[in-house]
Image 1 (cartoon, rainbow, N blue to C red):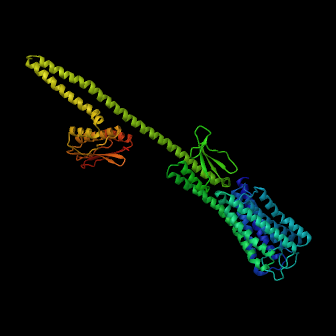
Image 2 (image 1 turned 45 degrees about the vertical axis):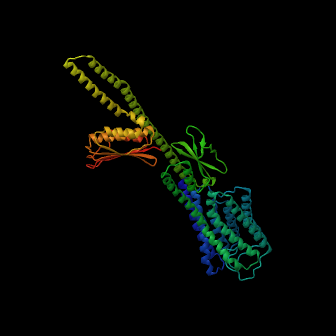
Image 3 (image 1 turned 45 degrees about the horizontal axis):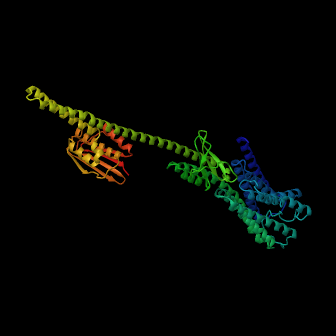
Length: 587
């Protein structure tokens, strides 16, 4: 049915209900019976409230769940309830029709209660109860009418229990009335047993859907049960007046409770926003995602199975193969992103009656799964970048070691050999000319200076002492050669991993170089101390400050420190000195 046609049908039914209520009021006031004035108003108000309540809530339920029969049953029950007023019209056809339709109202109530919330029978027990309920209504009353056991027209106020008033006469029910009431009591007891058996066997989600309707319906059935039992016990009618009024009051409230159940479903959908926000506060790990989804759906059995990319295999939160085929006790909703199934939501089949809620939760969960996949991809890329940066640093250090070794074993040794050759040549000359002797001396001095510079360059490229003796002796040697006074306030005696010692050494070396070249410092303090599972390196000078943390030297240090998962902090206020602090994990 198109939305426009559905809207027209809804308004037509609502108008018909209003007209039926007006007709009921006219039948009670102008039907030909003498009706006590003190009961006209409460009778009309209460009965119209019952009829219109069922019709209104039934229309809302029908519009919200077109495939559900509950709304249709409620609308029919509301009209049948209003049609009871035909018994107030002092004509035989109206009386007969009013009796029959009034009985149908009770049968529709049993049908609605037994099959709530779907409106469909699901087993032989429910079919028997619904069938008996209809047999005890119009067919049985038709037999009684044919046998003349019903009170005829023109005998006092409207018959068939339309008015709830105590009788002034002697109360003496016929034996057939007692038999009928016994059967009705048995039916009501069976309905109560069916209700609570179904409620106890249901899961949490099903109980949530059943509770709002079954509690009110149970109160009505219990009240009617007591009322009918009072008839069987031959108690005066005045005893059942309060019970009869109570039953009708509950009948007014019961559809409202069903409406609140429908509105609660809308409130449940508002919880999807909280689901998205809660999942956004942290990683959507499988266990956490399942917990949030189950809480939002009010279904503790709900869980999510994840699809292995590129396959049709699904795994649960524990990584075990998961069966994602729908079953009688398990419904499945696909979580899709960009037309591709990324996971499935397995939940209680009763939630199929809340397709909007399930779809909203599935969309929120699918978004969380996709976000987590993207985050995992980003984390993987970051890890690869970190690993790549570490490999670059390690490759650079390896290259430094090779250059230092090549200089030490190659160029330095050759220069030493040349120096020895010059000294040997000068020694073999008995009396070299003064000019030649001066040239040899000068060449030897230049060679010695070049060798010293080459050794210093080799130590700067990669300190062999760091590998041989450790960080403490290497820093001590670095402090001795520094062009500014350096105080080693604290240095470690315990050896650390090679990458950590190398990074610490180069942080101190670069900071000392900057203090000498740019800071005009007169004093530098160096501290290398363990801090929990980390090693903290601090180099502080008393120079002019203003160091550029984005300069090539400090930027390179930051990259080296970050490659190990550490952090580099540079504090260099103008005329306030410079403090370089590196924190390195070394657990």
